[in-house]
Amino acid sequence: MKSLSGAVGLLERALGYTIGSLTAVTPEALSRPTPCPDWDLRALLHHLADSLAALYEAIDDGHVTIDVSDANSGRLDEAAGLVVLIRDRARRVLGFWACESDGDGDGDGDGHGDGDRLIAVGDRPMRADMMACVGAIEIAVHGWDVYQACGPPRPIPPALAADLLELAPAFVTDAERPSRFAAPVPTSPTASDGERLVAFLGRDPT
Image (cartoon, rainbow, N blue to C red; front, side, top):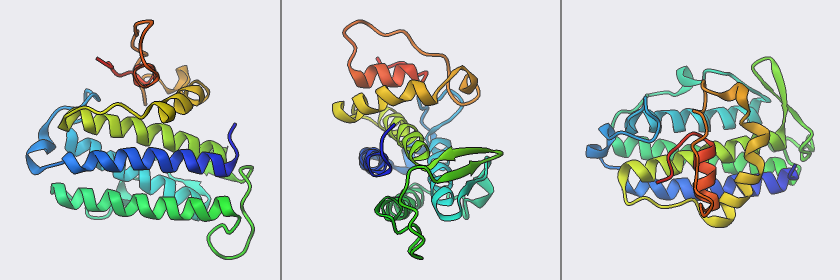
């Protein structure tokens, strides 16, 4: 497992990739299909905003509500508004998690710089470093989804993909399928780490 600072660095890289995907979001694109069969781009962006809200809640309050959709104030339907909402939440998430990894916690001097800090996810505890890694995996793959929906597709950066692929089997188990992730998709022996990662998470990389 990565240290908390290493996990937050991974989260920062995933956020950078995914925020880049938002430049292609237009009002016309909101109704386009995504690699997630039940979601068009609008639904995917709302989910991404909710996921960021959950990561913020995790580090700010020490717990995550399983369904955070009610906390997504505004539920904006307009493309530019959704992009602003996601970018703003991404900045807040990264800022708070960076403070945590520096040992400042939420700025109150409590010294929570340890990845052993437990965050309640529903009725289950999860270490802070694990939560950051899970967030990085989800955020990066949803960035890939946005690129696929809006075009042109852009693969997850090779080094980021390799790091996430190494961690993914520890977090995406059979218990997570099919509720959160579809069954893995077979890949060719020559598939890149990015292709293997999205395939492992139930997406067709071709």
